[in-house]
Image 1 (cartoon, rainbow, N blue to C red):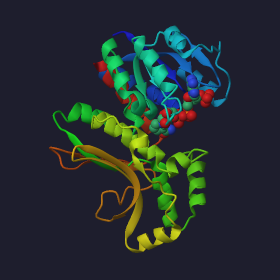
Image 2: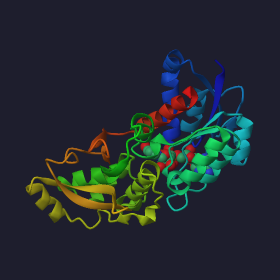
Image 3: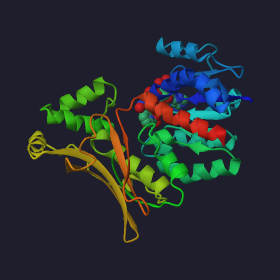
Image 4: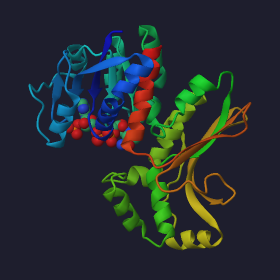
Length: 338
Ligand SMILES: NC(=O)c1ccc[n+]([C@@H]2O[C@H](COP(=O)([O-])OP(=O)(O)OC[C@H]3O[C@@H](n4cnc5c(N)ncnc54)[C@H](OP(=O)(O)O)[C@@H]3O)[C@@H](O)[C@H]2O)c1
């Protein structure tokens, strides 16, 4: 079997977790799937690009990153030229999300696909802003555009629908899709203030320095839009999702709810009602009889309502960047096995 050249566009938390996972799983992947690969390009923002069609030592690349040292023979090519110079057959894209436009990732993915390279992305921006365009482009070039990690990290959501539910129609969904707010609400149940709970989420690296995208429900809205666009085949922009975040919930309300034996959760939902898709993100009180009640900490859940299976749930416990990396690895194996 030939060795498949692969390149990383973005080498932050997710890119590096993927590099470590590939190193850890390399032998298993070879043995189980007869699939060999070598890394021929890594592109970052600050440290520039490392390109070597003969193969890059991933351990060495990780060491450079950890020491914040520029790559040897640093390049700063335009990204389409970086793809071409790396000669990679598969591009792993994990650059920061742009909720409003999906750029510049959309343009980069378009360039990769136009050049006949498979594109595997952890980025939800391109899914909500360019899913149809990128999927049709990939099809026309005989390559794959896959993005399992864009929603619920590595949990098999998109591949579940694509590979295991032939003929089923997803008619609705409900879920907890934002880890940060789920953790914050849980910590507030113990009497912590919103500010302290946010600081804790930032200290453990799950909330960004500006946490508003999580708190105001915007991240959840983007994920619901991605699920509706891909799985319910209704193109939906995040702005079309009715949205309320968790900022209006007071500590007193959290305590009253706890005393009633219930919990606040930021719930995402979408459903076709009289031919119109209604999608929303809003805090809800859930009781112990709800599957959402025990979704704790940074865990997440989605329950699909289909025309054949009334309620099919996937729960993901305590995700890490390695969980996200696994979604990309699964996409990689799916892609090359095809
Ligand atoms: N973290 C998670 O667990 C998780 C889960 C699901 C999905 N995701 C998605 O995965 C993506 C990456 O997340 P992350 O946590 O890994 O982010 P991150 O740590 O900020 O890493 C982003 C990487 O992209 C590089 N980069 C930024 N702009 C670039 C550009 N224009 N060209 C080339 N490289 C560029 C950055 O380089 P510099 O640092 O040098 O600027 C860095 O290497 C995001 O879209 C995120 O929404 C993340």
